[in-house]
Image (cartoon, rainbow, N blue to C red; front, side, top):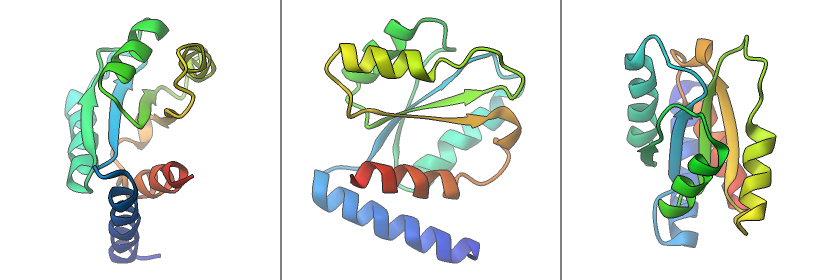
Length: 134
């Protein structure tokens, strides 16, 4: 699929989402480690924003409850974690459990590896929008 085709698909999925929900999808970006190149992290946020997402930033992930609280307060549809490929800890299950405990199982939790930050987030956007359609 060409980049132009995938962007068109994102636009179609985004329109369906907005028509159904009355607003753009909102994601909370966080990292499980301090990213050496903050520019890459900000580029990811800009790419999501350019595709039509509302983007919030969370501080570097240290506490599941704090991240979940911020996600609930910001009324996000998805928590998007940037994780290291070498990372031993996978906080996604803890985050999902905390969301369920707070009666918010509808918030999607996804992750992307730091080495993939330089790649386009169009594929990530398509995956998120398809998951949020359900």
